[in-house]
Image (cartoon, rainbow, N blue to C red; front, side, top):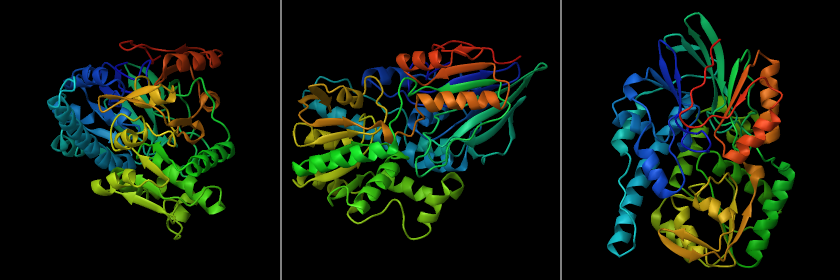
Length: 462
Protein backbone atom coordinates (compact mmCIF):
# COMPACT_ATOMS: atom_id res chain seq x y z
CA UNK A 1 0.00 0.00 0.00
CA UNK A 2 1.55 3.28 -1.17
CA UNK A 3 -1.30 5.69 -0.40
CA UNK A 4 -4.96 5.74 0.52
CA UNK A 5 -4.30 3.58 3.60
CA UNK A 6 -5.64 5.18 6.77
CA UNK A 7 -6.73 8.25 4.83
CA UNK A 8 -9.25 9.16 2.12
CA UNK A 9 -6.83 10.83 -0.28
CA UNK A 10 -3.78 9.99 -2.33
CA UNK A 11 -4.85 6.52 -3.44
CA UNK A 12 -2.00 4.35 -4.78
CA UNK A 13 -1.83 0.55 -4.56
CA UNK A 14 0.85 -1.64 -6.14
CA UNK A 15 0.05 -5.17 -7.33
CA UNK A 16 3.19 -7.28 -7.80
CA UNK A 17 3.63 -10.80 -9.16
CA UNK A 18 6.77 -12.60 -10.26
CA UNK A 19 6.06 -11.46 -13.82
CA UNK A 20 4.41 -8.04 -13.57
CA UNK A 21 3.80 -4.87 -11.55
CA UNK A 22 0.54 -2.94 -11.91
CA UNK A 23 -0.36 0.32 -10.18
CA UNK A 24 -3.97 0.84 -9.10
CA UNK A 25 -4.71 4.59 -8.98
CA UNK A 26 -2.27 7.48 -8.81
CA UNK A 27 -3.99 10.14 -6.74
CA UNK A 28 -3.01 13.40 -5.11
CA UNK A 29 -2.94 13.74 -1.35
CA UNK A 30 -5.44 16.47 -0.44
CA UNK A 31 -5.15 17.90 3.03
CA UNK A 32 -2.90 20.22 4.98
CA UNK A 33 -0.99 22.34 2.44
CA UNK A 34 2.48 21.64 3.84
CA UNK A 35 1.81 17.93 4.30
CA UNK A 36 0.38 17.72 0.80
CA UNK A 37 3.41 19.53 -0.59
CA UNK A 38 5.72 16.92 0.92
CA UNK A 39 3.62 13.83 0.14
CA UNK A 40 2.87 14.78 -3.46
CA UNK A 41 6.51 15.43 -4.35
CA UNK A 42 7.34 11.71 -4.25
CA UNK A 43 5.51 8.77 -5.81
CA UNK A 44 6.74 6.17 -3.33
CA UNK A 45 7.88 3.65 -5.96
CA UNK A 46 10.10 3.29 -9.01
CA UNK A 47 8.14 3.91 -12.24
CA UNK A 48 10.65 1.79 -14.16
CA UNK A 49 9.13 -1.31 -12.54
CA UNK A 50 5.59 -0.61 -13.80
CA UNK A 51 4.00 -2.64 -16.59
CA UNK A 52 0.62 -0.87 -16.46
CA UNK A 53 -1.53 1.58 -14.50
CA UNK A 54 -5.26 1.10 -13.84
CA UNK A 55 -7.51 4.03 -12.97
CA UNK A 56 -10.95 3.49 -11.44
CA UNK A 57 -12.27 7.02 -11.98
CA UNK A 58 -11.24 10.61 -12.63
CA UNK A 59 -11.42 12.30 -9.21
CA UNK A 60 -8.07 13.90 -8.40
CA UNK A 61 -7.51 11.92 -5.20
CA UNK A 62 -7.35 8.91 -7.55
CA UNK A 63 -5.98 10.43 -10.79
CA UNK A 64 -4.34 13.72 -9.89
CA UNK A 65 -0.74 12.44 -9.69
CA UNK A 66 -0.79 10.68 -13.08
CA UNK A 67 1.24 13.47 -14.73
CA UNK A 68 3.90 12.86 -12.09
CA UNK A 69 4.34 9.40 -13.63
CA UNK A 70 5.15 11.04 -16.96
CA UNK A 71 7.57 13.46 -15.29
CA UNK A 72 9.35 10.50 -13.70
CA UNK A 73 9.72 8.72 -17.04
CA UNK A 74 6.72 6.35 -17.24
CA UNK A 75 5.64 5.72 -20.83
CA UNK A 76 3.45 2.62 -20.45
CA UNK A 77 -0.34 2.28 -20.73
CA UNK A 78 -2.89 3.73 -18.31
CA UNK A 79 -6.19 1.84 -18.49
CA UNK A 80 -9.51 3.57 -17.74
CA UNK A 81 -13.04 3.62 -19.09
CA UNK A 82 -13.58 5.91 -22.11
CA UNK A 83 -15.62 8.34 -19.99
CA UNK A 84 -12.88 8.50 -17.37
CA UNK A 85 -10.33 9.23 -20.08
CA UNK A 86 -12.48 12.06 -21.43
CA UNK A 87 -12.96 13.48 -17.92
CA UNK A 88 -9.26 13.34 -17.11
CA UNK A 89 -8.58 15.86 -19.88
CA UNK A 90 -10.36 18.85 -18.24
CA UNK A 91 -9.74 17.67 -14.66
CA UNK A 92 -5.96 17.32 -15.00
CA UNK A 93 -5.69 20.48 -17.11
CA UNK A 94 -7.62 22.34 -14.41
CA UNK A 95 -5.37 20.86 -11.72
CA UNK A 96 -2.27 22.11 -13.52
CA UNK A 97 -3.78 25.58 -13.95
CA UNK A 98 -4.86 25.78 -10.30
CA UNK A 99 -1.38 24.76 -9.14
CA UNK A 100 0.17 27.48 -11.28
CA UNK A 101 -2.38 30.06 -10.10
CA UNK A 102 -2.00 29.11 -6.43
CA UNK A 103 1.80 29.26 -6.68
CA UNK A 104 1.59 32.74 -8.20
CA UNK A 105 -0.91 33.89 -5.57
CA UNK A 106 1.25 32.59 -2.70
CA UNK A 107 4.23 34.42 -4.19
CA UNK A 108 2.27 37.69 -4.26
CA UNK A 109 1.29 37.20 -0.59
CA UNK A 110 4.91 36.54 0.34
CA UNK A 111 5.92 39.75 -1.44
CA UNK A 112 3.37 41.59 0.73
CA UNK A 113 4.95 40.22 3.88
CA UNK A 114 2.71 37.21 4.64
CA UNK A 115 4.71 34.41 6.32
CA UNK A 116 4.29 31.59 3.79
CA UNK A 117 6.60 29.20 1.98
CA UNK A 118 6.72 29.43 -1.83
CA UNK A 119 5.34 26.45 -3.77
CA UNK A 120 6.22 24.97 -7.14
CA UNK A 121 3.54 23.29 -9.32
CA UNK A 122 3.84 19.50 -9.44
CA UNK A 123 3.29 19.50 -13.20
CA UNK A 124 2.15 21.70 -16.06
CA UNK A 125 -0.22 21.51 -19.03
CA UNK A 126 2.42 19.88 -21.24
CA UNK A 127 2.79 17.06 -18.73
CA UNK A 128 -1.00 16.64 -18.71
CA UNK A 129 -1.23 16.44 -22.50
CA UNK A 130 1.51 13.81 -22.59
CA UNK A 131 -0.19 11.82 -19.83
CA UNK A 132 -3.55 11.79 -21.61
CA UNK A 133 -1.85 10.23 -24.63
CA UNK A 134 -1.03 7.20 -22.46
CA UNK A 135 -4.63 6.54 -21.36
CA UNK A 136 -6.32 3.65 -23.18
CA UNK A 137 -10.11 3.52 -22.99
CA UNK A 138 -11.47 0.08 -22.04
CA UNK A 139 -15.29 -0.20 -22.08
CA UNK A 140 -17.25 -1.85 -19.28
CA UNK A 141 -17.36 -5.68 -19.36
CA UNK A 142 -14.54 -6.09 -21.91
CA UNK A 143 -11.79 -8.36 -20.57
CA UNK A 144 -8.22 -7.56 -21.63
CA UNK A 145 -4.73 -8.70 -20.68
CA UNK A 146 -2.80 -5.67 -19.39
CA UNK A 147 0.39 -7.37 -18.15
CA UNK A 148 1.77 -10.94 -18.12
CA UNK A 149 -0.67 -13.06 -16.12
CA UNK A 150 -3.05 -10.16 -15.33
CA UNK A 151 -6.38 -9.56 -17.09
CA UNK A 152 -8.59 -6.52 -16.44
CA UNK A 153 -12.36 -6.05 -16.61
CA UNK A 154 -14.24 -2.86 -15.65
CA UNK A 155 -17.80 -2.88 -14.29
CA UNK A 156 -19.85 0.14 -13.27
CA UNK A 157 -19.19 1.49 -9.75
CA UNK A 158 -22.03 4.03 -9.87
CA UNK A 159 -19.91 6.70 -8.16
CA UNK A 160 -19.21 9.27 -10.88
CA UNK A 161 -19.46 9.26 -14.66
CA UNK A 162 -17.24 6.46 -15.97
CA UNK A 163 -16.31 5.15 -12.53
CA UNK A 164 -15.43 1.48 -12.41
CA UNK A 165 -14.98 -1.41 -10.08
CA UNK A 166 -11.65 -2.90 -11.17
CA UNK A 167 -11.73 -6.70 -11.58
CA UNK A 168 -8.34 -8.36 -12.05
CA UNK A 169 -7.84 -12.04 -12.89
CA UNK A 170 -4.34 -12.93 -11.73
CA UNK A 171 -2.24 -16.03 -12.47
CA UNK A 172 1.29 -16.47 -11.17
CA UNK A 173 3.32 -19.66 -10.87
CA UNK A 174 0.22 -21.85 -10.82
CA UNK A 175 -1.59 -19.71 -8.24
CA UNK A 176 -4.68 -17.67 -9.11
CA UNK A 177 -6.92 -14.98 -7.69
CA UNK A 178 -9.78 -12.79 -8.80
CA UNK A 179 -9.31 -9.40 -7.15
CA UNK A 180 -11.96 -6.69 -7.16
CA UNK A 181 -11.11 -3.11 -6.23
CA UNK A 182 -14.09 -0.84 -5.64
CA UNK A 183 -12.32 2.44 -6.35
CA UNK A 184 -15.01 4.65 -4.83
CA UNK A 185 -18.32 2.81 -4.55
CA UNK A 186 -21.45 4.75 -5.49
CA UNK A 187 -24.36 5.66 -3.24
CA UNK A 188 -27.41 3.77 -4.51
CA UNK A 189 -30.62 5.37 -5.73
CA UNK A 190 -29.13 8.69 -6.80
CA UNK A 191 -30.85 9.96 -9.95
CA UNK A 192 -28.06 10.42 -12.50
CA UNK A 193 -26.09 7.17 -12.39
CA UNK A 194 -27.07 3.50 -12.16
CA UNK A 195 -26.43 1.58 -8.94
CA UNK A 196 -23.08 -0.26 -8.57
CA UNK A 197 -22.73 -3.65 -10.24
CA UNK A 198 -21.71 -6.78 -8.30
CA UNK A 199 -18.64 -8.68 -9.56
CA UNK A 200 -18.69 -12.49 -9.69
CA UNK A 201 -16.17 -15.06 -8.48
CA UNK A 202 -14.11 -12.64 -6.38
CA UNK A 203 -11.56 -14.11 -3.94
CA UNK A 204 -10.13 -10.81 -2.64
CA UNK A 205 -12.01 -7.52 -2.31
CA UNK A 206 -10.26 -4.18 -1.82
CA UNK A 207 -13.01 -1.89 -0.59
CA UNK A 208 -13.14 1.81 0.10
CA UNK A 209 -14.35 2.84 3.57
CA UNK A 210 -14.99 6.58 3.32
CA UNK A 211 -18.32 6.38 5.15
CA UNK A 212 -17.52 3.17 7.02
CA UNK A 213 -18.85 4.63 10.27
CA UNK A 214 -21.81 6.62 8.94
CA UNK A 215 -25.12 6.15 7.20
CA UNK A 216 -26.81 8.60 4.87
CA UNK A 217 -30.32 9.77 5.54
CA UNK A 218 -33.16 9.11 3.14
CA UNK A 219 -32.96 11.24 0.00
CA UNK A 220 -36.40 12.67 0.76
CA UNK A 221 -35.20 13.98 4.13
CA UNK A 222 -32.06 15.38 2.52
CA UNK A 223 -34.15 17.28 -0.01
CA UNK A 224 -36.33 18.75 2.74
CA UNK A 225 -33.27 19.88 4.70
CA UNK A 226 -31.70 21.34 1.56
CA UNK A 227 -34.87 23.31 0.84
CA UNK A 228 -35.14 24.53 4.43
CA UNK A 229 -31.50 25.68 4.49
CA UNK A 230 -31.85 27.63 1.24
CA UNK A 231 -35.17 29.19 2.24
CA UNK A 232 -33.87 30.19 5.69
CA UNK A 233 -30.71 31.78 4.29
CA UNK A 234 -32.47 33.62 1.49
CA UNK A 235 -35.00 35.04 3.97
CA UNK A 236 -32.22 36.72 5.95
CA UNK A 237 -30.65 38.09 2.75
CA UNK A 238 -27.64 35.78 2.66
CA UNK A 239 -25.81 33.69 0.12
CA UNK A 240 -25.57 29.89 0.12
CA UNK A 241 -22.04 28.82 -0.79
CA UNK A 242 -21.83 25.15 -1.77
CA UNK A 243 -18.30 23.76 -2.23
CA UNK A 244 -18.64 21.08 -4.89
CA UNK A 245 -16.40 18.89 -6.94
CA UNK A 246 -16.98 19.70 -10.59
CA UNK A 247 -17.40 16.00 -11.40
CA UNK A 248 -20.73 14.50 -10.33
CA UNK A 249 -21.38 16.50 -7.15
CA UNK A 250 -22.07 19.69 -9.09
CA UNK A 251 -24.40 17.84 -11.45
CA UNK A 252 -26.22 16.07 -8.59
CA UNK A 253 -26.76 19.33 -6.69
CA UNK A 254 -27.96 21.17 -9.80
CA UNK A 255 -30.44 18.38 -10.48
CA UNK A 256 -31.69 18.55 -6.88
CA UNK A 257 -32.08 22.34 -7.10
CA UNK A 258 -34.04 21.98 -10.33
CA UNK A 259 -36.47 19.60 -8.62
CA UNK A 260 -36.90 21.98 -5.67
CA UNK A 261 -37.41 24.99 -7.92
CA UNK A 262 -39.95 23.12 -10.02
CA UNK A 263 -41.95 22.13 -6.92
CA UNK A 264 -41.79 25.63 -5.41
CA UNK A 265 -39.91 24.36 -2.35
CA UNK A 266 -37.23 27.06 -2.63
CA UNK A 267 -37.42 30.74 -3.61
CA UNK A 268 -36.45 31.72 -7.18
CA UNK A 269 -33.05 33.20 -6.32
CA UNK A 270 -30.17 33.04 -8.81
CA UNK A 271 -28.07 29.87 -8.93
CA UNK A 272 -24.48 30.13 -10.14
CA UNK A 273 -22.28 27.21 -11.09
CA UNK A 274 -19.02 29.12 -10.88
CA UNK A 275 -16.73 26.59 -12.47
CA UNK A 276 -15.45 26.47 -16.04
CA UNK A 277 -14.54 22.86 -15.26
CA UNK A 278 -18.11 21.93 -14.32
CA UNK A 279 -19.31 23.36 -17.63
CA UNK A 280 -16.87 21.14 -19.55
CA UNK A 281 -17.72 18.08 -17.47
CA UNK A 282 -21.46 18.53 -17.91
CA UNK A 283 -20.87 18.44 -21.68
CA UNK A 284 -19.02 15.11 -21.30
CA UNK A 285 -22.17 13.54 -19.82
CA UNK A 286 -23.88 13.84 -23.20
CA UNK A 287 -21.11 11.81 -24.85
CA UNK A 288 -21.47 8.71 -22.65
CA UNK A 289 -25.03 7.37 -22.50
CA UNK A 290 -23.62 3.98 -21.47
CA UNK A 291 -22.60 5.43 -18.09
CA UNK A 292 -25.78 7.17 -16.95
CA UNK A 293 -29.24 6.01 -15.91
CA UNK A 294 -31.94 5.56 -18.54
CA UNK A 295 -33.98 8.37 -16.95
CA UNK A 296 -31.10 10.83 -17.16
CA UNK A 297 -30.32 9.82 -20.74
CA UNK A 298 -33.95 10.31 -21.79
CA UNK A 299 -34.10 13.72 -20.10
CA UNK A 300 -30.82 14.87 -21.67
CA UNK A 301 -31.98 13.98 -25.16
CA UNK A 302 -35.62 14.91 -24.68
CA UNK A 303 -35.25 18.65 -24.24
CA UNK A 304 -35.54 18.64 -20.43
CA UNK A 305 -31.92 18.56 -19.34
CA UNK A 306 -31.40 17.85 -15.62
CA UNK A 307 -28.59 20.40 -15.75
CA UNK A 308 -30.56 23.48 -16.90
CA UNK A 309 -33.39 25.55 -15.48
CA UNK A 310 -34.52 29.17 -15.35
CA UNK A 311 -32.29 31.22 -13.08
CA UNK A 312 -29.29 28.89 -13.43
CA UNK A 313 -26.08 30.37 -14.85
CA UNK A 314 -22.83 28.61 -15.62
CA UNK A 315 -19.96 31.01 -15.03
CA UNK A 316 -16.58 30.78 -16.72
CA UNK A 317 -15.43 34.41 -16.91
CA UNK A 318 -13.33 35.63 -13.96
CA UNK A 319 -14.92 39.09 -13.86
CA UNK A 320 -18.40 37.57 -13.83
CA UNK A 321 -17.28 35.36 -10.95
CA UNK A 322 -16.13 38.40 -8.97
CA UNK A 323 -19.43 40.17 -9.67
CA UNK A 324 -21.36 37.43 -7.84
CA UNK A 325 -19.80 38.48 -4.53
CA UNK A 326 -20.31 42.19 -5.23
CA UNK A 327 -24.05 41.70 -5.70
CA UNK A 328 -25.68 41.99 -2.22
CA UNK A 329 -28.75 39.95 -3.19
CA UNK A 330 -29.27 36.33 -2.04
CA UNK A 331 -27.89 33.66 -4.36
CA UNK A 332 -26.78 30.04 -4.45
CA UNK A 333 -23.13 29.58 -5.47
CA UNK A 334 -21.67 26.22 -6.45
CA UNK A 335 -17.89 26.32 -6.83
CA UNK A 336 -14.91 24.01 -6.47
CA UNK A 337 -13.12 22.51 -4.87
CA UNK A 338 -15.34 20.26 -2.80
CA UNK A 339 -12.98 20.25 0.22
CA UNK A 340 -12.24 24.00 -0.11
CA UNK A 341 -8.56 23.38 -0.81
CA UNK A 342 -8.38 25.35 -4.05
CA UNK A 343 -10.40 26.89 -6.85
CA UNK A 344 -12.97 29.65 -6.94
CA UNK A 345 -14.81 28.59 -3.81
CA UNK A 346 -11.95 30.08 -1.77
CA UNK A 347 -12.64 33.51 -3.25
CA UNK A 348 -16.34 33.22 -2.43
CA UNK A 349 -15.56 32.08 1.10
CA UNK A 350 -13.16 34.95 1.59
CA UNK A 351 -15.92 37.36 0.54
CA UNK A 352 -18.73 35.81 2.63
CA UNK A 353 -17.30 33.87 5.59
CA UNK A 354 -17.52 36.83 7.99
CA UNK A 355 -21.15 37.58 7.07
CA UNK A 356 -23.58 35.98 9.54
CA UNK A 357 -26.26 35.89 6.85
CA UNK A 358 -24.18 33.41 4.80
CA UNK A 359 -24.58 29.65 4.87
CA UNK A 360 -21.76 27.33 3.82
CA UNK A 361 -23.48 24.13 2.73
CA UNK A 362 -21.21 21.06 2.73
CA UNK A 363 -22.54 18.23 0.55
CA UNK A 364 -19.55 15.88 0.44
CA UNK A 365 -16.87 14.25 2.52
CA UNK A 366 -14.34 16.63 4.09
CA UNK A 367 -10.94 15.06 4.67
CA UNK A 368 -8.78 15.72 7.70
CA UNK A 369 -6.75 18.96 7.69
CA UNK A 370 -8.76 20.52 4.85
CA UNK A 371 -10.53 23.86 5.11
CA UNK A 372 -13.76 21.96 4.49
CA UNK A 373 -13.17 19.82 7.59
CA UNK A 374 -12.43 22.93 9.69
CA UNK A 375 -15.70 24.45 8.53
CA UNK A 376 -17.52 21.20 9.26
CA UNK A 377 -16.08 21.33 12.77
CA UNK A 378 -17.48 24.87 13.16
CA UNK A 379 -14.12 26.42 13.93
CA UNK A 380 -14.47 30.01 15.09
CA UNK A 381 -11.67 31.10 12.77
CA UNK A 382 -10.44 29.62 9.51
CA UNK A 383 -7.44 30.35 7.33
CA UNK A 384 -8.25 31.44 3.78
CA UNK A 385 -5.40 32.41 1.45
CA UNK A 386 -3.03 32.46 4.40
CA UNK A 387 -5.11 34.88 6.49
CA UNK A 388 -7.11 33.91 9.60
CA UNK A 389 -10.70 35.11 9.33
CA UNK A 390 -13.60 34.91 11.80
CA UNK A 391 -16.27 32.43 10.74
CA UNK A 392 -19.56 34.17 11.27
CA UNK A 393 -21.31 32.22 8.52
CA UNK A 394 -23.55 29.30 9.40
CA UNK A 395 -22.30 25.86 8.35
CA UNK A 396 -24.66 23.02 7.40
CA UNK A 397 -23.61 19.49 6.37
CA UNK A 398 -25.79 17.32 4.12
CA UNK A 399 -24.40 13.82 3.58
CA UNK A 400 -27.46 12.49 1.76
CA UNK A 401 -26.20 13.91 -1.54
CA UNK A 402 -22.88 12.11 -1.21
CA UNK A 403 -21.74 10.01 -4.17
CA UNK A 404 -20.13 7.51 -1.75
CA UNK A 405 -21.80 4.39 -0.41
CA UNK A 406 -22.48 4.54 3.33
CA UNK A 407 -21.76 1.87 5.94
CA UNK A 408 -24.94 -0.09 5.25
CA UNK A 409 -24.26 -0.13 1.51
CA UNK A 410 -20.59 -1.08 1.92
CA UNK A 411 -21.55 -4.05 4.10
CA UNK A 412 -24.32 -5.08 1.71
CA UNK A 413 -21.91 -4.87 -1.23
CA UNK A 414 -19.38 -7.13 0.51
CA UNK A 415 -22.11 -9.62 1.35
CA UNK A 416 -23.30 -9.63 -2.27
CA UNK A 417 -19.75 -10.20 -3.51
CA UNK A 418 -19.38 -13.13 -1.11
CA UNK A 419 -22.70 -14.59 -2.29
CA UNK A 420 -21.47 -14.57 -5.91
CA UNK A 421 -18.02 -16.07 -5.37
CA UNK A 422 -15.56 -17.50 -2.86
CA UNK A 423 -14.48 -14.36 -1.04
CA UNK A 424 -11.55 -15.03 1.29
CA UNK A 425 -10.14 -11.59 2.00
CA UNK A 426 -11.38 -8.03 2.40
CA UNK A 427 -8.84 -5.20 2.45
CA UNK A 428 -10.18 -1.85 3.66
CA UNK A 429 -8.65 1.35 2.25
CA UNK A 430 -9.59 4.95 1.51
CA UNK A 431 -10.96 5.75 4.95
CA UNK A 432 -9.92 7.53 8.11
CA UNK A 433 -9.17 5.34 11.16
CA UNK A 434 -12.61 5.64 12.85
CA UNK A 435 -14.37 4.68 9.61
CA UNK A 436 -11.98 1.80 8.94
CA UNK A 437 -12.36 0.40 12.45
CA UNK A 438 -16.15 0.65 12.41
CA UNK A 439 -16.47 -1.02 9.00
CA UNK A 440 -14.02 -3.77 9.97
CA UNK A 441 -16.17 -4.49 13.04
CA UNK A 442 -19.28 -4.73 10.86
CA UNK A 443 -17.47 -7.21 8.59
CA UNK A 444 -16.01 -9.29 11.42
CA UNK A 445 -17.89 -12.42 10.34
CA UNK A 446 -15.90 -12.56 7.09
CA UNK A 447 -12.88 -14.93 7.04
CA UNK A 448 -10.21 -12.21 6.83
CA UNK A 449 -10.60 -8.44 7.11
CA UNK A 450 -7.38 -6.42 6.84
CA UNK A 451 -6.88 -2.72 7.54
CA UNK A 452 -3.42 -2.03 6.10
CA UNK A 453 -1.02 0.77 6.84
CA UNK A 454 1.11 2.55 4.25
CA UNK A 455 3.93 0.21 3.25
CA UNK A 456 2.12 -3.02 4.16
CA UNK A 457 2.31 -6.00 1.79
CA UNK A 458 -0.57 -8.45 1.54
CA UNK A 459 -0.63 -11.81 -0.28
CA UNK A 460 -3.81 -12.30 -2.36
CA UNK A 461 -2.82 -15.39 -4.34
CA UNK A 462 -3.62 -18.98 -3.32
